[in-house]
Length: 236
Image (cartoon, rainbow, N blue to C red; front, side):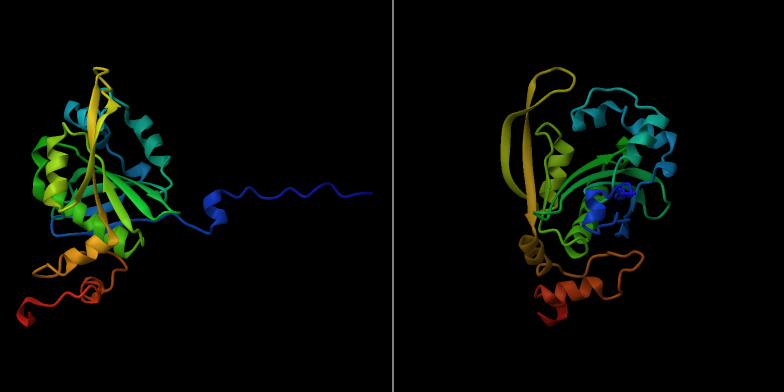
């Protein structure tokens, strides 16, 4: 008697490539970046996405998602190709904002968007430190070769953060998006940094930046700086 056909186990594309989710836990001088888990979502974090200022930056209509719906949304991220990272205050642990990072594994590209939850925390030093920690993570640990940010032209805070972070302006896309509230077409800017540009900026640093976290070697930053050609200020 013939045996019934053997059912092959369901293998997802990521499992087929033997790739696993990446749990981020990295800190800078001011902020800590951690992969956001669904069970860590608080009502305060869920309410961020109903803030008019945030919705304007995301080009989304103002509508409250609700705590349960937002937790389900967080759970939908695979934290490899689609990453959702919580930005917290390093000193007190207060949640400050979110980092959305899409990764193209084949082309080693990352595309990031920063959301700062409350107006009092929308400071350049917070956004700059979060962006800097993200760049060290994606370029020295995730082995990406390019990182982009694409804020709407009207999002002045995000545009200013990209300029302060020394990202290169690749272009401005005219009438590229449709306003989620008015239906009008809006411009979008594209800022980027390549791995080579990141290494070039290393050589101009006066002192090593703060980049710490579980599993980060004590010489991780210095070794990468040295490999890029950086020299301590006293030896220049």
